[in-house]
Image (cartoon, rainbow, N blue to C red; front, side):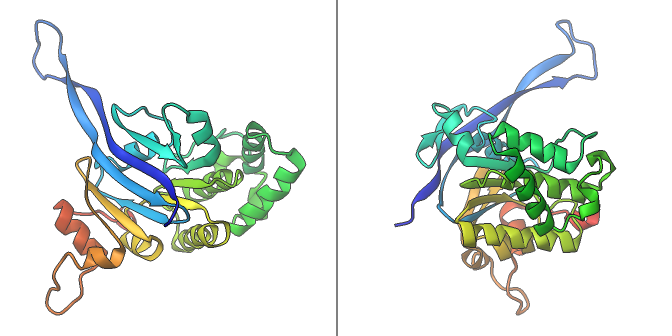
Length: 275
């Protein structure tokens, strides 16, 4: 039986948001309302698995990733990473994971090498060895040597995302949380990142949880996929079994996008249309 890397059980998370009224009110112009972001979600991710999470904007994907990463506290339920509880033992979880998000942040005035060297020191890595490793990772990601010493603020959005991925790989995490990691990347860079994700799983046994809006990416990379809508998991299966949930139309086999649209009832806007 496969070892469980991530165990999510009945996780619930809500936020209180302020709603403004267009007319004056005696007690002020705002009231608080509750928004459920993750609604009693349960699943397991096996060690060495690439597990995808799909869903429309606002479905709870990124909140779920932040809960696993110990950046948010759940209002109910439990999450463990290799048997370490994210609430009771967050430091142990943090030593096992790393996260790449679509809103990667850096010291913009510093170079990729300076940013990554700083991150390496935070994790207690030897500076000399870290610099060698940084160059190797950036080279694998296709970052030009001439860009390593330039300020991050002068780099494209796609190049900055590569630096964020390199920073995550420095620690050789047992679990890598990728929250839309290829958003903003050109087709070649996207393929390089996708190839690296498979390499990490196949050669290092890294467990990877991936959120994406790219249906082809999910279909190609993921062993299993959970589709979320309005904070709930509405389907969880292999890509092949998910496609079997939707009947063929006009003799054409359904795609993962057909399944997504059928289960969420919402139009997916591709990254390419927004780039």
